[in-house]
Amino acid sequence: MTLLITGCAGFIGARTSQLALEAGHEVVGLDNLNDYYDPRIKRHRLDQLLANEGFRFLEMDIEDGVALDRVFAVRHFDAVINLAARAGVRASIQTPHVYMHTNTVGTLNLLERMALHGVSKFVIASTSSLYAGLPMPFREDALVTRPISPYAATKLAAEALTHVWHHLHGIDVSVVRYFTVYGPSGRPDMAPFRFSEWIRRNQPITLYGDGLQTRDFTYIDDIARGTLAALQPLGYEIINLGGGNAPISINAMISQLEENLGSTAMIDHKPAIAADMQDTSADISKASELLNWQPLTSSAEGLAQTAAWHLDNGNWLDSVEI
Image 1 (cartoon, rainbow, N blue to C red):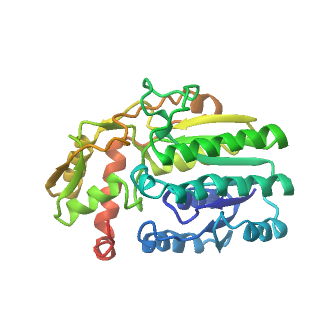
Image 2: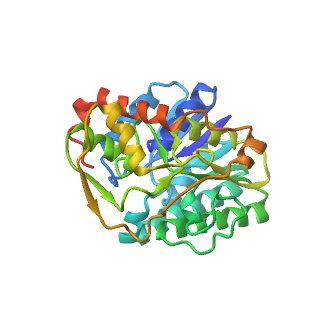
């Protein structure tokens, strides 16, 4: 297949692109390489992708409809995987308009071009943040109409738009809701990366809350596999990709990172943030049934791989802001 993968230099986008290339697909990758976090990490991921003959990179923004018109006019795509997004609950509170433009308007731009040029399959990343306040484990049929952060609200709006374009234009849509993705070359605004670096650098960890909050951590390779599995024709489906109802506490994550990094964490406790979820846990029975997908990497193994990457890349990570 020929795939358009947006956000290809991002954490999930880069690994999904790499696995797609290894599977024999041709990948056109789009990314605006913004400075939400240190662009050197995005360049690090992108350099690995550019070593593949089947990969072509275009530096551009999905908010730029004119640029997208040019891309769709000269290339036919079998599917679009939209992983370009502004992510992060806390940052969305500070810059909600930025999140609305990228996550919602950007998605609309892609859907319009897909309908115009006859691209029949759309996979889009969504978020477990939509489940805030609902009973666990979270199921895809839960009523998620009351988000508690601008980030979650924009992802819900994007989900709604995909259903409209499925209904009006017959686009086959897989919405994949991710649960706390982590692993090597992760995002510096997320706890696994930040805590790994703070421990490695012998700097204090900033911990919001008491650390008893839990997350259904999902290893990056499992997420990338599930995203590609969602390329199959499904009609319109929303599918959880999570650790499989096996959450661990933030304190437990810190302990495992300490062990793998060989250093003890210094913790600076801060008050909990209202927009943060207390716990997450994914019901992944739908992913198992429709995609034949299960997470293969335990949190212990995944955190060991994460810590090893930080130790191996410490020479250039020292200067990365977190």
